[in-house]
Length: 333
Image (cartoon, rainbow, N blue to C red):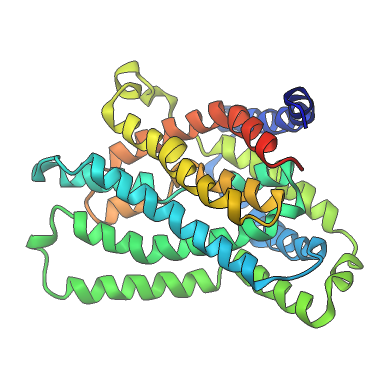
């Protein structure tokens, strides 16, 4: 596929992506927006439309190969731990007094928004061919956030030495509770339900169920709206904040270091273009907004995380066309 062909095939898909994100941003800052409405839409997308779309994606899998599952798990681990070690090396000379800031940057660089940001983009660009792999990546990403993320919070907590001894038991309970909630999360239940139906009844049984395309379309447009709604405050984007070293560290980790390592594994290991593109989009996703909650609990620099999430998400939308252009050239669909 020539570069011109890539551009022509990409343009209408990107137009849809940016149009619905823009609608979400307009809604977020309009007088008609109510935070309750945003939460309701998020729950409907996450609890109904995403799960059904994930189950429907099994209908496009001709042969289920355990090797592919292993590759996705490997790539997810590489993406997360490469990001962590990159930001760790960048911060290795930082003084102890900025533990809270170091912890904030570690969370932002390590744990991406692996669900709401990349899923609609994957649906728009590669469709069902990449959704199965994306769902497995999300499962690993959230498992790491709920275990390794808690461990990082404990390590970087500037108040850890002044806390009671029973805090360790409380942290263990947090990890246990998080993992139980993860296993009950509808998209992950859908991952295993779809796998069960596929193995027992075959992909034809899934394709015979009507309505999957409708759910997929609503999932696409609804989650793109939610990306726009996720922007909280553009007033933080002052030039001195944007040009800060912290923004540079997280941005270079998310958009340069981790993707280069991940793609070096995907080129020889990926079994399809859908797999490679989906996993690359997730590996380059901006930081998750849930990192703010971890910062609040572990006394990290909450304002720093909020700034980084806002700007790097905006930057992710700016670099997205170039990212997809390169990916479709390397892995033509």
